Length: 361
Image (tube, rainbow, N blue to C red; front, top):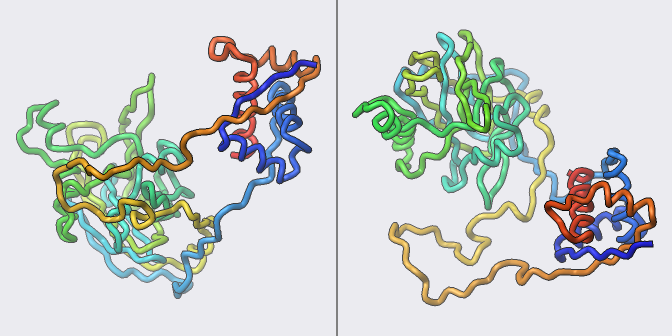
């Protein structure tokens, strides 16, 4: 038998404890051996998912019908955008008029503009090109689903590229003035008192992209008149679409075209089709933190009374001794990444935690 000691943080040990509570193994060393065996065999069984949080019944109070009712409809001309109030249970529909037109989208909580769509979180959960079945998520600390992408006839949306800006056109192409998404968004959001600083990274609708050698690349697109996306609001939002102002790249095939935007009621069937969501204690607002007041002073200055109070610090390490038989020793030897880990215990910790994430993710 070989005696090996893993050093785990107390947080990592909580994962082990959770697995033991779910009867995945009789004790912690047995769980480590299970992780080692399944990893070496290349067959990792999915554990029963841990249910946390509470069901989020976002549709409570929504009186949906069997048919859609159009509440508002307009055509956004080239170089323009508009802010739309989209209440929970209503749908924002963005539709091609002539085809081949990229549209940038910003989304804010209508009752708390500091909660807004976080493209990075959305990209992490749904990929670089989210399509139907994806959610638009807000940034930490709130981290909620704001809208649900229920319909997407083109399937070419992008979360890689930032909005184009006036400086981009001047610095790259020498234009002193050019239609650009940052300024269009700022002007459209001004109707609701927001400033250019409040414009956030856009969810780019009808934008074909890919990654080549680690760099994002824009492709020519092909959308037809009538192609559309439909986003169902899960909370009251201010949705701000704009016609992308880029006519000197292939984003919209070197053109600027109008798009049709409408706000309409969702049907009972559409609401019922949204995948279940849960609410969590970790979906917080500034009121849950020590600094609960949102700043209005722009200049930053040090708080002389500040005392650090980081959660779960100092980090505590816990020794977990494990006995391995000859077969397990050979398994670990085959998996041991010696370039990364000189110590067997560190290598075995990597096996355990990699297995845990793969089997419980």
